Image 1 (tube, rainbow, N blue to C red):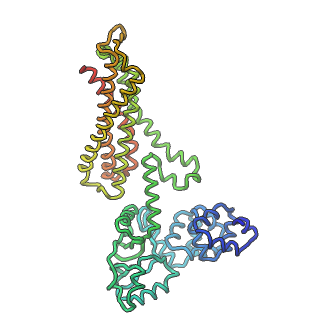
Image 2: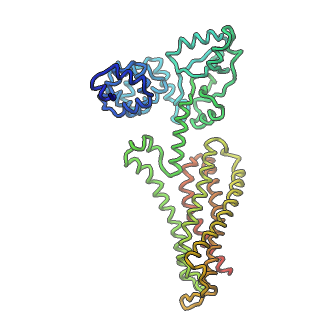
Image 3: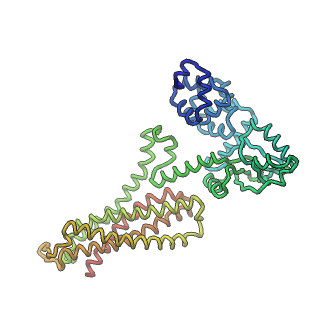
Length: 481
């Protein structure tokens, strides 16, 4: 029997057994496939504590529809099983009329706690902290602490760590549940507690994620501006933050507006996806006009310059232009590597916004020179192989072009172009890697998002600059020889 059939038969025992034997995430997936009528019926059949846990695992859109269709009594029962931060998240996402209904069905004390969370900005840790916490007093004994935790277990979010406060409610340390349970009953908590890192309500979410990574803890206390303990952040919250930040950075690096794509991919409308992608594509298209102008100027110059015609360069315009995509593509990829690395280092706090520009510059300069040298050599070998296959490298004849005989045989010009392309490859790799490292640092320094600025600026400048360098080097070598 599946869930839909059990609901149609109103088999309460089967539904309750199902809710206990299947992981919550899988139950949520099954519930989201049901019609709204069956969803409401499903929750009516459940025990209240299980209903609250399943409800909190549903997509926000599904939660909203359920709130619309639940009775006030059922709304109150569900909300009683949710943590305060979960209620705050719900209120932030649903329409105002439903928010009022939610607030009406919670007691004044919880309403005050919810409003405390809602006053913080979305990117601040206070907006997702849990205020349903247990704080223990430093002069309590281990036995008193155990009794207090036992009495409060149904009203708070239980964790592995418990925080110790003094008489002014200021954090003085922490203990694990094991520390309390295995200590002597009459031992005071201040004798066994240990120091613990903390964050503040106004700290940015991504900064708090770094604190978690550095301290290897599953829970971290949250303080207000008066240094008083008012909440905590759990590893569950941090996992969500890391996922959100990672997704946001990936979208921004690709020139996609992440604010328009908060829903799952398959649930996001075509119009929203188009809206999120089109802006930077238009910007990049117009930016590419610069490369088009440079190519047009140089090809016109090659076709109409008598001095270059006498060198025989005009014959190889198509060959020269065919190499441009390889050089500009390599430049773009090299720049993106540096930009991605520096952006990640900035987000993790490995590089500070100030004082590190010089170190990063010289590090990337050394990296770019090594990589550029390797690619220069490989590119020259690649072109030699390419022109050997096309037989151009074996052509020892002199070419007649517009009534003039070239000074050098064809294979010599092929070698010159290959050398020019390879030297250009070295220079554009060095340029693009330095550019890719400097742009994120400059963006961070002026308060802009490095992930947003890097992609369009890099794409435009590396394309145009690589084309300019290649044409310039090629013409210079032809003139010298």
